[in-house]
Length: 159
Image (cartoon, rainbow, N blue to C red; front, side, top):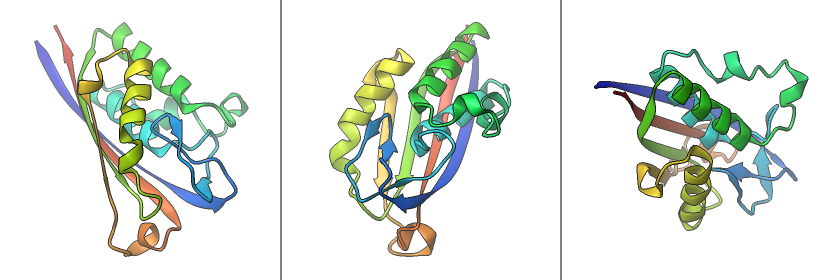
C-alpha cells in the first residue's frame, strides 16, 4: 500500500457584508471572506492538501481565479471535483486534520456542521475529518480581524 501526505495553507481577506463560507456552511458574521469563488478557506486548504499529496499540482492550477467559470462558485463543487481526481488516480482519503485561524466569530459551535458537510461532499465518514480552531491572540492580520487563515494535512492511500 502506498501512503502519501499532503499539506495546504490559505488566507483570505475579510470584508463587511459578505457571506462567510467556512467548511461548506455559512457562518453567521458581519464579515465574509473575499475571493474569486465563495472564498471558503477551509475547503481550499483541503483541496490543496489532497492535490499535493497525489502530486496533482494545486487548487490554482485546476481552478484558476482568472477563469470566469469559477467566479462565485460554491467551493464544495471544487472539493467534489478534487475527490474525483484523487479517486481517478487510484487514491482514497485516509484522514484530514485541519486548523482554522480566526479571531471572531468563534468557530467551535459550527465544527459539527462543517464536518457533516465536508464528509458528505467527500464521500467519507465524519470521523475521517478533524477541524480545529484557534485565534492568534490578537496578533497579525488574523488578530486584527482583517483575514482568516487555515491549514490542512491529509493522508491518502493507494492499494
